[in-house]
Image 1 (cartoon, rainbow, N blue to C red):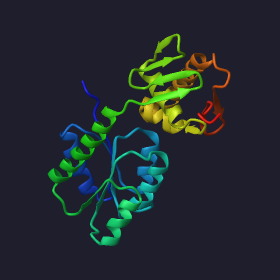
Image 2: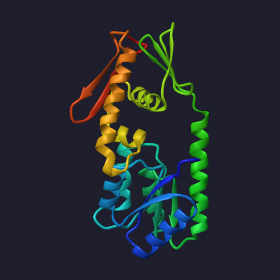
Image 3: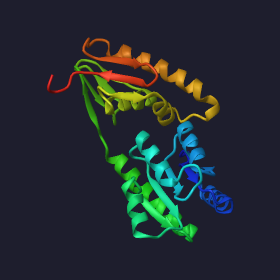
Image 4: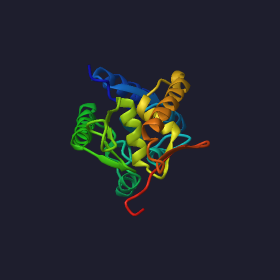
Length: 236
């Protein structure tokens, strides 16, 4: 059974927010509702989401500011703005901070659903075509086959080992944010975040053992931030 798509809905209009949440849940989506921008930011930090629906005019933190915060953590997640504003300047501002679409109120919920489905089809289509291969020192890592090879032995990785190593490779020689990695790969309920974080530490240890035959390759703990995969580049 396919896992439900998780949507973060930030809408300060209690009536509209409740109706949208019920409508999307009836269509098979897993929807969390936040009533202001600060609540939305906290929700985003505590759980993995596949898509964000952000009202522009919200108390405490508006949708544009929230989108900027979200983009600092995840540059790829789709964002749709919901707003009563229809001025050209506001539309341009929305796309400037990373909007994938822009729905002006009042709107048909069916139309919004079609926009969501179109974006998800595009994203999923892009993912299905990706076959990324990384060079990690003497190792070759095929993310699609979930195989790490040293030229002599092929090691089949579990899905979480594969996802975690892929995230480290995406940020190779840079820092992978610990909180983002936990939420993206383990997708924990907030009550089980610490359990998931400890589980990730175990997987980091496993990956270190798999890569230990190349002394040029290290996975470092960056205190208070996350992890860094150190590996030689093509220029080294």
